[in-house]
Amino acid sequence: MGDAAKGPTGPDLAAGVTLADLREGVPLLGHVGDDAVMLVKSGAEVFATGATCTHYSGPLAEGLVVDGTVRCPWHHACFDLRTGEAKGPALNALACHEVVREGALVKVGGKKSAPRAVPSIALKSVVIVGAGPAGLACAETLRAHGHEGAITMIGAEPPGPVDRPNLSKDYLAGTAPEEWIPLRGAEQLADNKIDLVLDAATRIDTAARTVTLQSGRTLGYDALLYATGAEPIVLPIEGVKQAHVHTLRSLADSRAIAKQATSGGRAVVIGASFIGLEAAMSLRARGVEVTVVAPETIPLARILGDQVGKFVQGLHEAKGVHFRLGKKPARIDGSQVVLDSGEAIPAELVVMGVGVRPRLDLAKLAGLTVDNGVVVDAELRASAPGVWAAGDVARFPRHGELVRIEHWQLAERQGRHAALSMLGRGSPFSDVPFFWSAHGDVSFNYVGHALAFDAPEVHGSLEGKDAHVVYRKDGKVKAVVTLWRDALSLEVEAAMERGDEAAVERLVAK
Ligand SMILES: Cc1cc2nc3c(=O)[nH]c(=O)nc-3n(C[C@H](O)[C@H](O)[C@H](O)COP(=O)(O)OP(=O)(O)OC[C@H]3O[C@@H](n4cnc5c(N)ncnc54)[C@H](O)[C@@H]3O)c2cc1C
Ligand code: FES
Image (cartoon, rainbow, N blue to C red):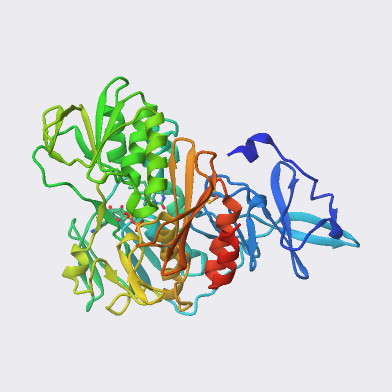
């Protein structure tokens, strides 16, 4: 959030810079009044946009310009330079400014208003089941692209769409206030004529095109987005129903964990997943004694490989997290977790982070094709007419196979993509998957998707916090993890997007 706090830097763009000051595709950071603004030259055109990412205020002038877009170096949000429109993880568009040429000078003028879009298909009513990032991005894209009919977003989780990644990180650590967590307030939704209904959908009738809610209300739809996300798995062991045993998905979960996290208290985190480990680190920040119990011998090895897994374990141990690896919990016995080895670990708080499963009940009941996810086509259309699916619940075609990917960025982008398809502007979904994970002051960016991989190649130094790791299968680069090499991460993403394997090879060889 530094840029705004430091005040404007660089030239006064309202006064102008010379065209010769601009390098093709390289943002020039300056300001207009107190606003950080950047200029980007792209061929014969020059664009002026806000320079602060609308996600978590990343420095866009340090990002990458690709085909009329700028990408944020922190978590890869993508903004259209012409319209400012955002693609996940950012939701809010960037301000776009007028650009005026006066002789050799390029001057930045006032903010432009968003262009008025007219959809190819006019829908009377769209119902969105699930008020997560996929649902919200769908709703807001519909409006931004000219949909004038009703939008009803049904969410079973108060208060509505929340910044879920924060729930295991800063919010749980006590360093982010609760007002940062809701993605939209009631007023913002109302201004955009998005009707958020806090209720559970209990039935979808795809023939009648209706959705029934728990309250008994029935809603008709022309188009429906199924975006019910995923729910945490609860291990079938004795003692999981006690009040001090939690999973972590919702704001209520994170609040309840934070409430029981007392400094000097003891917690056991079951599962060395990303969420389990992030929760462990956040609980340490609150002064809690934390032990992570997991059946694998190296945390995250299945996803990141042994070397990175051991490095992550070391980061946690350096903060005082204890590990019991190669062990399973047998039962939760009052205020102790008893392991299969017989060891009993005292814990007044237990957090279970053992993975999630897609919420499919409603889809199965509705007769949608389901196979470890709601099966969709390239435009994210499910098997019934007028139904799309997006986010954690969707199983979509990628490189000749069906995949289901649980990433925040992808959920938002698929929600947006489904909205465009509903409006008759569909295209095959081909965005490169991306996620980030934070472990104290060390963050990873993961671009691509590698379910299986050969021995990962580590370039640079993990301990020196300057590295990238390449994951290949059958010789081809499937995914790349970076630590502090944000520019490389963006360039690899752009090359993967173009399908330019030679460029990916050149980049990862650096
Ligand atoms: C603690 C935590 C930290 C995370 N951190 C990261 C991270 O750092 N980076 C990253 O890339 N990803 C992260 N993720 C994963 C990311 O949050 C998910 O991929 C993303 O939320 C998926 O979005 P979605 O819209 O598909 O589903 P969800 O966010 O799960 O939203 C679905 C919504 O639908 C509602 N719903 C379900 N069934 C019904 C029904 N029948 N009626 C009405 N509503 C219903 C649910 O209550 C829920 O609110 C994290 C997840 C968690 C839990
Ligand atoms: S700060 Fe820009 S994508 Fe997160």
